Length: 171
Image 1 (cartoon, rainbow, N blue to C red):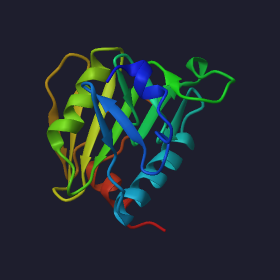
Image 2 (image 1 turned 180 degrees about the vertical axis):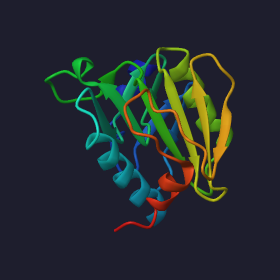
Image 3 (image 1 turned 90 degrees about the horizontal axis):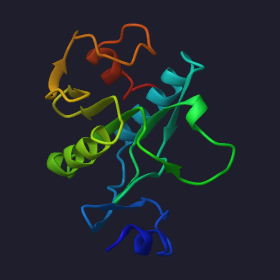
């Protein structure tokens, strides 16, 4: 399916959202409790610590020929318009949270597409394994765990994988 055909479809914003990845129409996985808490708490954590970027949950990002909906898109404020709707372009930093029944390969494919189109940093959080895969620019991913300090485009103070994982239990 083409991007134009996909965007013309009704109900692509139904919950969970639909995405167009490699010409395939795929519905996102319904998040679990820990996934939802982590997503909310991480967005709040990031937004409380920067005014240059905005972290947004489930924002459709149109990066032709893909139309993806990252769990969290972090975008420089000057790149966000005043009109409602999807974001045209790749986020500066994207975060995906892997659900237990989600394909890691599919998530990596979305991440690699965004990285090749302007995303500077990507995290793939695996709650089950207590790991975060991190891509920066053209580099291969590095797997972080425990007390490893995570890169964050110099937006955040130092944060560890353990600190991110604790965000799954906050209320």
